[in-house]
Amino acid sequence: MKKFALGLLFLTAACASAPDTSNMSAEELYNLGYEQMQDTAWSKAAGTFEKLELEHPYSSWATKAKLMGAYAYYRDEKYDDAVIALDRFIHYHPGNKDAAYAYYMRGLCYYDQIVGSQKDQDNTAKSREAFNELIARFPDSEYAADAKAKMALINDHLAGQEMEVGRFYLNQKNYLSALNRFGVVVKDYQTTPQIEEALYRLVEIYSILGLNEDGTKAYQVLKHNYPDSIWCKRAEEVMAK
View 1 (cartoon, rainbow, N blue to C red):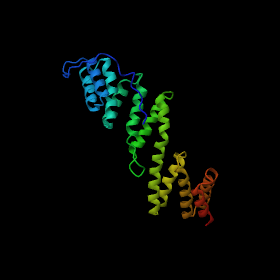
View 2: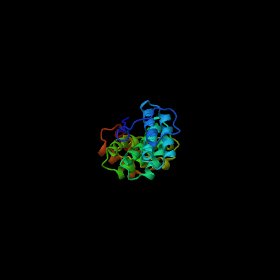
View 3: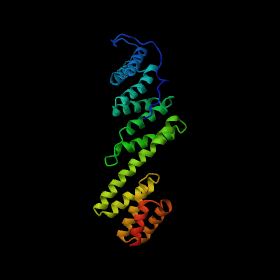
View 4: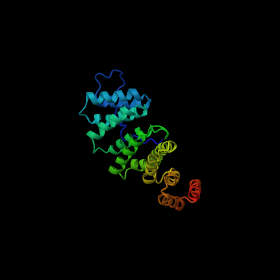
């Protein structure tokens, strides 16, 4: 997955070498956290940045530490802690030059937890919500561009879950519930690969329910847009009956 550089945040102030952090300044703590990140000691780095925030809350370093700590948690795959830190940064520093990055990272925390469409898609939905907010607030940022590219996978997974549930209802002969699920795919996920099967399922269910006019409309949409699809051929067979 693409990782955006944090070069603007990694300042070059001299770092204290002493392991005892009890009397460290905000600058020294920040640079210690940076060194720990360079060594991929993500958990230690996150702790150091949190210590900086607690002991020097009004320093400019504390603002940077919020975002750096969030990144450390993210790399340590402690996504909940990362989101909490990012929400804190966004809340207290909405106009900061790195706000777009914070919104992007929040979306990534959910995006990296996306699972197969057979499982719960709560993180997928949260990822879409977070990326949509990023795109709305910072439409011209490099992060928004990457978020838009990730939307294809997000929508594919959400559509896939609707299809899974729809097939379950169809197998249970709960036709109206199945119809609603496939209808969501047709309405909200038209650019995903699931659209072809979803249209076929509408034809199939309308035929079962005797709603021939509605079935014909769904078939015409399928045939017009995907004439060579296997689902179109199956729909033709249903219509022929």
